[in-house]
Length: 326
Image (cartoon, rainbow, N blue to C red):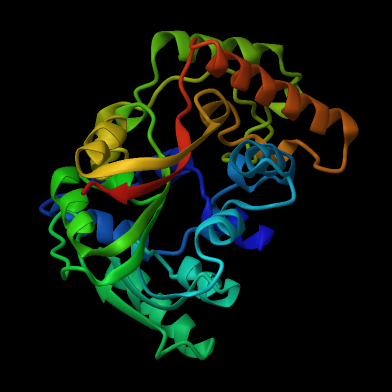
């Protein structure tokens, strides 16, 4: 389960951090997004901050209270001790969440949507190979235009997908309509600055921490040429227009718009305002088996958490459970 979460929780900065190699012309934004998420880029990317065991342990402690209990087992144990009959997964990508959720006993069946035709084809193939063809119905669908059936689902899951949605109002209104009585919506989501336009204060904090890190921790795993990452600057908005126009398109508005149609039952922030971009491209330089490296990661995580508690910064990531407003 831990390895699944590491793969699933690919950091949003690394989704858009690799420069585009060609100019995209005469292609719609939806096509760019579909093509981007339909391609496998596993070999191109170093691990993200949310794929590192030491950081994940800290995240789990913040979300579940126990570094040995992951976010999704916590949700199951708290809200679905028995498998739900039918759930919906929004922005399912390659479909790993649904397959693992069924094996965990969160649900018996899933409907799952994603804008990427390539991702859906891969997800269907993987479901077939896992013997889950009858348990998961994968469909190509844009979450900006989604229309859902009324009172159909026991739970709706959005795992790192809602920050790609522009029409949040329609999405949450449709989700409210589609949930059964006592149904729940679960988001594990980036809710930080729109299009990663980090504030000057956060940018300064990240850069001061980068300066303090020894060079061996700053070695760029994007380049793998011995160079180091010595400074962070937010990527210009134009960068995302070339790679993924949907990236964090209205992320800073997610919570406020969610609250129009839902009451939040659980809000479990787990950081990222600093760590997300600080560790972009360098996470793998920290050895999870080294006491020194682990201590350094935990110190930075505790520093970030303390700033949150005192209202200096806000968490950019959170696990959220919500009920439809009556």
